[in-house]
Length: 191
Image 1 (cartoon, rainbow, N blue to C red):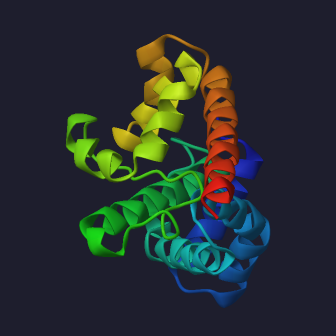
Image 2: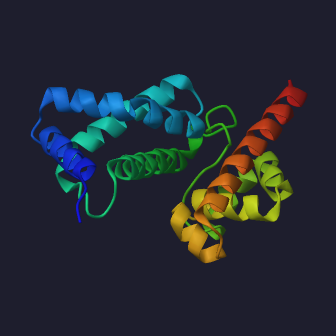
C-alpha cells in the first residue's frame, strides 16, 4: 500500500526532476537545514559545509528522477545522497595529500577510503588522530573505522556488529564528539 505522503514526495521529486524552480525551493526548504547540519558535522569549516550543501542539492536535482518512494522515504533518500557526497568529498582530499594537514581535515580528522590497511599511510601521517581513535571505547572505535575508513553504511555496520541501528548511530555520534574534543585539546597543547 502506498501512503499519501509517499505520493506527495514522488510528485515533488518529479517536479524537481523536470526543473520546476518552486519544487527545488520546496525541497531545499524541507531539507536544507538537515543537509547543512550533516555537512557541518563532517567538514572542517562553515564555508566548506555551505559549499557541500549546495553541491548536494545540485546532485539531488540531477538524480531526482531516480527517487523511488517504494524503496525509501524522501528524507532517507536525501540523507543517503548527502552522505555519499560527503564521503566522496573527503575521499578527494585523500587523493590530494599535499593539502592534507590537521587544519584542513574535517573536524574529527577522518580520511575515509578503502580498507584499514590502505589507510595506514594517512593515519601514520597523523599519529595524534590514530592515537585518539585507539583510545575510544571498542564500539565507538569499530563504528568509526568501519564507516569512515572502510566506507560501510551505518546499516551495514549494524548488521556486521549485530547491533541495533540506533546503537550504531549513537556510537558514531558519541565517538565523533569525543574525537573532536580530544583533537581540539591536542591542538591547544601544541599552541
